[in-house]
Amino acid sequence: MTVLYELGALMADRGIEPRGVVHVGGHRGEELPVYRRLGFARIVLVEPNPTLAAMLREIPDVDVVEAACGAYTGRTDLHITENSKLSSIYRPISRPIARTVPVRVVRLAHVIDHRVNVAVVDAQGAELDVAAGAPLDRLDLLVMETRVRAKYAGAPLHDDAVGWMARAGWAVAAQWSHGGKHKLHDVAFVPERR
Image (tube, rainbow, N blue to C red):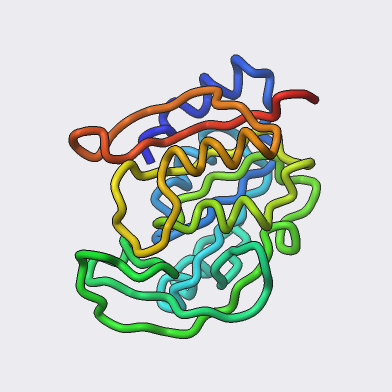
């Protein structure tokens, strides 16, 4: 997510203390150097791919949750693509699925505590599922990647995400476009009133 390089400035501008961060879609922990540089005291990585979650558990001083995040608890299928960064609980439209594995689904509210005040969500189309199960009343900042064009069957698009977050009382604080022809946006949301 390109927004991570702007995260420190945004947090400083908004007076958001780097207490704890949860990154949903932990993958291989690529963002860890940024979180450590910003001084987060607690880092939680959520990753449903069992192979990647096992790798993340080898990293010191990081809490790892092996699960997908959603509005409910239960189980679902993770569609793993050749490029593991593009794996999703939503079925990819144009990418072939290498394999499908059943994974646990948890509500973000059940796996993070009061020390986590920032959430970064890169869940390949499942961002609103994550937000629906998040403790929005305890977060100071929520960053999510959104898409302008459908890449996953049934997944919400950019305008859906912005509208849902607005109805939940969150405003766009910053937005960065990337992915060629601005197909992707990293959107930083903050509570409208607090």
